[in-house]
Length: 124
Image (cartoon, rainbow, N blue to C red):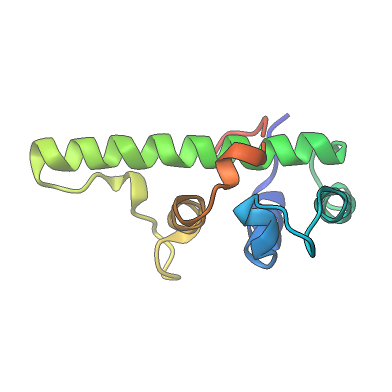
């Protein structure tokens, strides 16, 4: 079952609000255990909303898959723009918030290593 738009927003905002989690780099202050705790926290929040329920590892996989799909769409957009010199509507959104979720996902995934450590079974 695909995740809902509300769940996508919650997941995106959660990762945005936790840059250590998004970077995928562990340190003395940000450990694997802390990352797991954060994923469990967001999993509880996501499972409390309407939509599919998953374990924390599945939500982590959902995040990674969202990043991968976003990068693929961004690459397709770039390729089309190089060929036609006209941007595709792939990254254009009807939202007036500055590009919508796809743009936000692209920006977050592009500036982090998130796609390497976070995962998803949902479509973007």
